[in-house]
Length: 347
Image (tube, rainbow, N blue to C red; front, side):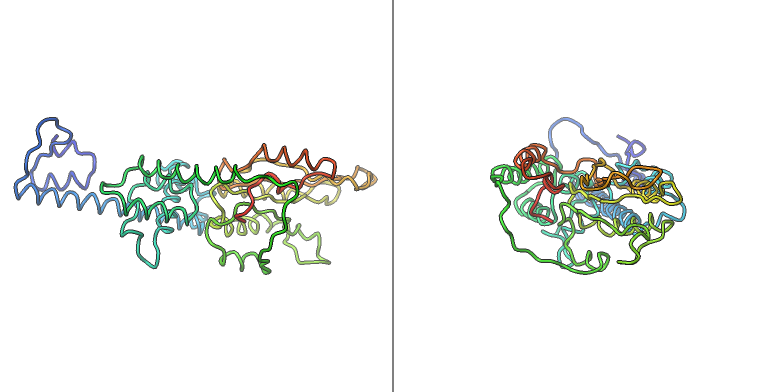
């Protein structure tokens, strides 16, 4: 293969500079390299290593742009920015950001675990499904035991083993008739002040009933309807790094009626969250059977509120069988709460 056929431009430039030819993938007996060839190999491998490090820097920069929404002056969404500015698909941009996050999690006290970081996105992709602690454990064991260059398939096998053990421990735990009393810590404060104190990817489920748009001014300050979508997006953006990859966010909210028509601030908030990269999984109903039938002379009372199900991915964790079992057990005692269908113990 001649230098003009080598796909990587950095390697191609090096080869053209030296006027050399590189044989890639040729079959036959192995041969020893002379001193000049060994020197050339070292230079080329150094270029490859440097190129990989620059790609990781690219991913880190892209992740920072998404987290800080630095694209917002020119593009409506991060996906639009990736596609129009860099030609990346939505999936490609997300994987780069996940790669940067994994690399951050594998850096302890300023140094990478085992002296190495995954220098390919395909190496970080399986790790992105794990919690930060699991990532560090898997990577530490892999780097310590592996005598060959990193392999995406080998990392994937280890990740599957860890995931299988975690899942089997969850399945083997019996579901009690009544949940035992548990002790825990209550953290009181403004959500935007408290969130930075939580560990990244440590929250499995969020159930929240945010302040309605200026509808409870006698009890707490609210946000004007025009500001509500941006405000809710900023809260969700602060929450996102703290969520596990398969986490869920359940938002209890209902638009009010103003001048005889339903306000659109909730609709605009849903669209703003979608534009910010959130997946709207479904919409549930919180029924209020004790509500009166008449709400106004022109309409019936809405004896329910929406529960909007958002998630950072389109595949959040939910155990349908466990939900059904708990629902059947609680039928005689009332409706099951929304927390029944989501994994407990990590939030």
